[in-house]
Length: 389
Image (cartoon, rainbow, N blue to C red; front, side):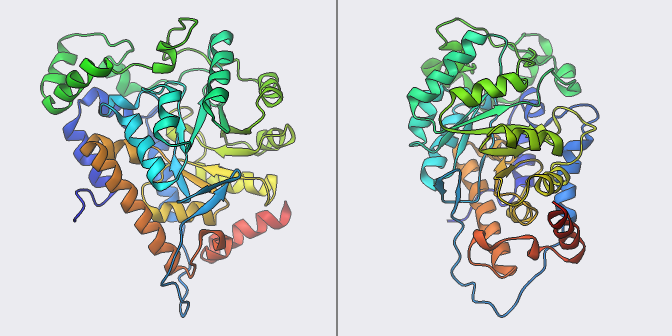
């Protein structure tokens, strides 16, 4: 059966037509002039891989191991809040794919389904992402809920101490809870498929809401632009003492920060610039990945996101020092374009391309991918960095 979507870019174009502009811009937008978002992908495009020949790569395997867990793919899905704004049921679509393909789905504090529901749908293939929210009681409750629900990996996101300025959201009047005006009503009326699907879903599950807040026993309200400045070094120390499972720190770009996080006992560092949604002037994530790998050495697990739009990008991230990659907007574009089937198409496309590229650089397994697969300039730069570490 032929696929409906053959690339992430195709999914993005279709999603832009299919869902309200306000919702598309929430997914697609970034901070400042949004230049970093595009630079993330272009920096990956510029990396060159060295083809190899006369190697039997007829049978290839994309499975790998990260944080003690076996996965069917070398990538998962990054934590993203309020995914049901792209299409009703988005979180549960992703969870079912995580179960079927055996990859980790990172569940946001602001997810549109409860953390308990998502790990059940994902059949355990889920990690929980924590913000140091404005309410300490709420944070404590989330940690306990994650523990009781069977989460083995906790991700602390640290790059949102204060909200960034996102011009598209301001222009669209995007707020939560939503404020209804002529602009919003027209936007929804001119995108009837999304609007009717959302209304139909609301009879069963209600309008899209951040369900971990809704189900909190403390009645904590979700405040989209709230400060998460409580995530400081003392908070990380407390969390490391309290969380007995694997602990990941997300949103790290500075090598000095990475070294301190490693020294404090984190199990992995998640290199990310929040998809260009925080500091627009930050380095691209792939630049930060190379610098952090040089700083922490070869054994510290590094997870990567930022600009991945293809399987080729996944392989380039692994060759540049990542142990695992995460998709963000690509998954949302697929869902916005065609719901559950669109997500499945995008995962198929990225998996197929990753397998093909891996074979073309001479490997049957992702565990074999290294800096040696980079063309001369990139290889020399990365190798020198590791030698100096």
